[in-house]
Length: 251
Image 1 (tube, rainbow, N blue to C red):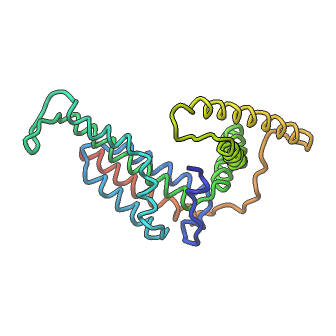
Image 2 (cartoon, one colour):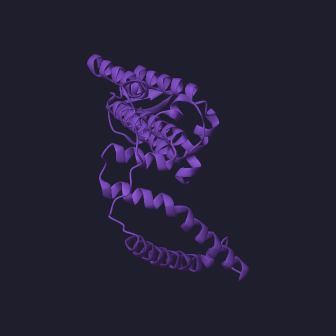
Image 3 (cartoon, one colour):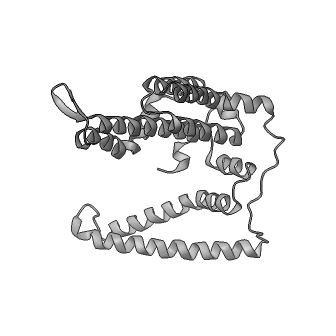
């Protein structure tokens, strides 16, 4: 699933926020969710209410989030296994013996993992991948990190198109990837794709050096987000931090 597929163009107030504001808001919200004590069940409900309020402004269908949140299914399965594999103390739930610590650990994974995934999906849905890189540059992220991310976004579709052409060529020559005994041919194709990608990367790097590459991607000029846009963008994160602080104080 590419980052471009996750983006949903729109004209909501969240879409129009500067990317650096959304990156800081999402990062702070996830940190507050992770810091919330697992015993504070009410706090996670309030975190979800804050997220639903943001979704109401974003106007992205709930089904869109639900389909893409399936990426956390392995962690959900782990969360459901822990109550049965944990140690003492144990209690009976509907006639089934479950571990108290295992149940809390499973709830912790399920609640925090789900909210983290949903916050990340909200950021991806409202921010184009190129804008995410620009936001990281404005936040003074490491130059090497932003350069790698920018080049990856630029050439991910190129590599995917190359893989599709190679697969079409194999199918035209009688290759059927549905059969297990043709896995060796598929593995060789992946190796060839890696070599082609490596060679393409070298050619692109030489071309960039020939055109005066200095080692850093240019940052588009920006007038700055302004205090009011910063306040509007981080308000959900501030509410999440207030809920987290209250939960830490009362637990």
